[in-house]
Image 1 (cartoon, rainbow, N blue to C red):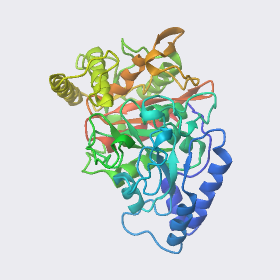
Image 2: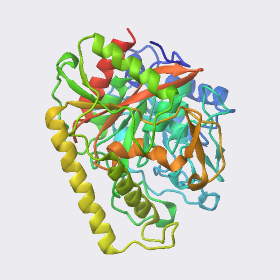
Image 3: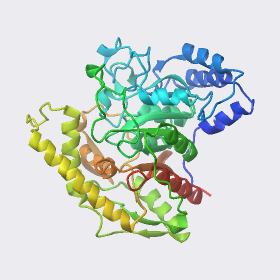
Length: 444
């Protein structure tokens, strides 16, 4: 079972090992990344904010030095999603009017990555206000999928996944509230991880209209890494986590899985379903226990409704929704209660199962479409459906605050397709390790 890859460039840890061994210097690594971006990014527009001069100066300062403890990314060049602050660079969230909004200090994650030795070379493309499964905005234009430039790289961390998939940089950091790490990883054929809510700081990830407010991390939204392999995801999590993570190291053969292959509100297209089921069949043939249904599974229709309601209120920040109504404090507390009931239901399910296997999205990367999300349609097995339904596969782990690792499992007509491995809260490292083991088994 194979999926399309576009580069033989080393991952982050492999590159760091080459630098440590003296095979290349930090400056040589940065210059090589600059050359790749300048060569590859023209038609992709994945990295519109570039900070090459400062990156080279940082790399020069590291040349001849050795990594200290905790510097697992010493000399490794990378980019980060445009919505994170980097001191001296604009943070626009895709708005032309905010191109003069120059950040005064680094976001927490940027500080952590720099402390780990990474060299930040710029920022990756996004949709306006981070609210689409495409990455197109008035400030920087449209990002494109490196597998097929006529298709979306996903969103809102679309430029991030495209840059990693194309080999421009070995890793990235994005955010996810409606699939914004998982969907780009799925669309571009790379690895992504949606973290347990609260695990990674989002300080310094504020809309420009709120710049300087030091807003607290909002509900649902998380920061999470994107890479070309599981080992790099693991390292990025360890370097940025604010608290200890569960690490059971349970062998794959001893794990019990539940497959969630469909939802009534959002059926899955054959392009995603068939490679996923082929991967599941390979696991079962290897003796892995996978149930196809369970009475313990929460009511996913209800979960989707409550998730979409909370998502809408959170994104609007109290402003009237599309129906013209403003959420009340009572509405909000009712949603928090519903979310906690959902969390408890999933906790009960994970007393029986180690992980859930599900699609990260019901479709593969779609052609660019400028129709507003609320009016957009999507084709599922030849039937037209409302685009808003697809968010059920993001909400399945977002609403209950669960971690989820996306790994590529196949391809259809040259486009990658993936699955997500969902686990109990704080089991982020276990999700990554299990996804790694699954990838090794099905791609051997």
